[in-house]
Each structure stands twice: as C-alpha cells, then as structure tokens.
Length: 350
Image (cartoon, rainbow, N blue to C red; front, side, top):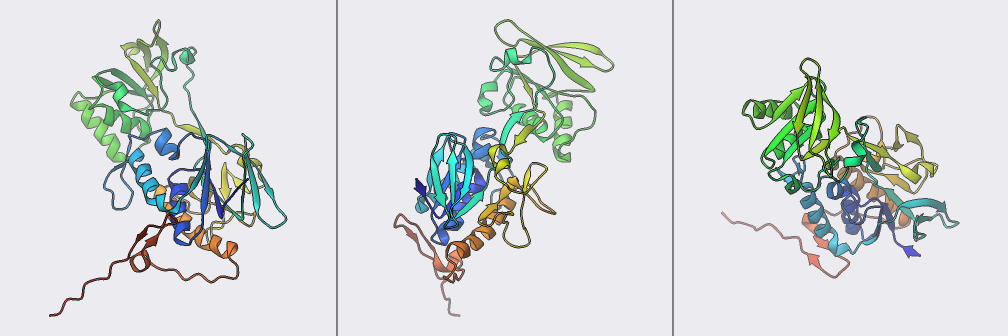
C-alpha cells in the first residue's frame, strides 16, 4: 500500500502544481494518472501547442510548461502511479481513503485531490463511412508532433479554436493547408479568425467555408478527400493528411461512481471556501470541477490548488497552526535537502 499526505488524481499541470503548494506546507504528495507520463492534455494532446495566458510567459509550449512544473516540484519528491486509472475509493475507519487503481495498486491518504482535468477523452469523429480505415494512415484527430506534416498537404476540418490555431501554425510547416468549415462564421477567437482570413488572402491557407468533408479515399493510405460545397458541389482535394478537429468528448470515468455531486460531467465544489466536494476530505480542482462563474483555465486551476491545499493542511493537522510565509521571506526547502534561501533586499544609504 502506498501512503501519502495528499493523493492527487491526475498529473496534469494543476495536479503537478498542487505538489509544489503542498510541499511548501511540508505535505507529501503522490499522483495517479491513466496516462504513461505526467502532463495530462498538455503532454498527450498538444505538447507543441503554444499557450499565451500563463503569467510571466508571453508564450510557452504546453510540453515546456509541463517540463518546468516537473522541475519546480522535484525537491518535494512526489510519487507517481502512471499508466493506471483510479477506479474505486473507500473511506477507512480512521477517516482516510483507500484508492485502488485498475491494476490493483492501493493508495492511502487522509486527503484526496481530484485534478483529473476534463477526464478521459475521445475525439468527436465526423460521420464519414470509411474514416476508421484511414486512422493512422493519414487521418489523425490529435496533433502531437507538427513535424509529421512538414512539407505535406494537409486538410483540417472544423471551426473552433483548435482548427483555427493549427491551421495558422501548420501554414508555416506544411506545403499546403486547407481549412474546411461548414459555415462562414467561426466559433473561435476573433483574432484567430482574422489571422486565418489574412493568411487565406496571402495564399498560405486554402479556406473553404460552407462545405464539409464527406468522403476519404486512398489505397494503402489517404490520398484524397471529397469536399461537398453548398454552391460549388463536389470538390476533390489531394492530400496526405486529414485532421478533423471537432473537439473531444470528456468522460469522468469511474470517478463518476464515487458518490460525488456531479453536474454536467463536472464535480460540484464549494468555491466560497476551499473547493471541497460533498464528501469531506475530497477536493476537486481544475477543469474537473464546477461552481458559479467557473473558468476552465490552467491559471484558475493553479489558484484553486493553492486554496485547497491550505485547507487540506488543517484537516491533516487539526491541532497544528499554520502561519503562511511568503517564499520571498521563507525561501523554499525541499524534502531532498535542497534549500532556496530568500534573499534580503539590499539597504542603500543616501
């Protein structure tokens, strides 16, 4: 049995940052994730995609953000159970929880932090009859390595942020990028829409609206798609890759059976206090939770983790008073013996 102070379900960016905040309070953490490596969506789905709303980072690749978070928490020696899904939870007589994975690994902790993002994901696939025949042979639903498309012909279908962002990004990688959307209006950010239309005028993106990809063709691998346009009719487009980007279907998985209050596939929490769930000792932070005014942003998850850990300290140490110290004053002392001292400001005499 693996014992720890805080058991974190989900090793995405919010789960990783929880380790840091807990470490400042001298609390040990262990993370469980169904993926084979830490990072969640950032590592598995879009490691090469830039993120623009992380404080102090005008731009950072999702994969690099994870690398930096892992480096930040190294001194606090987190434990990992990777490639295993948290399946069941049982309350013990002493008030702690036993969480067992689908591989039978048992974990025990007085506090459980669910930071599972949006859960597990399945791509929304367009209703093209033989599309599965070309999966892995030119049809991809997730872009992990943009270099795969270097000097290739690419067709992207979709009208949201992912379709727009990847069309813009791949316009500097692929030999030809075609973006197909069934409407003239897009659902994505306005600046991305404007950028796509600008690149279309420059001939860097072939923009086809009022149209849908209806057929895929090829022998051993994808070689062309049939695009049905509302006015122009059928358009045959030669391509090396088709990337349908219609979003992902999130599923909570076994967590949905833990007796937690669920609302629209998210866990209801008390955001007025500590991001606790309806089960004392279990908290939900990041995209997995919901409350009035919720914003599904990484930086909001960081805030939620910070608050939740403070209250978790009180639950783990009910008779111990914690006085918060700023890292600029107290520094950071890791469990591995390392210490980053706080530096006093120099006094300048005039």
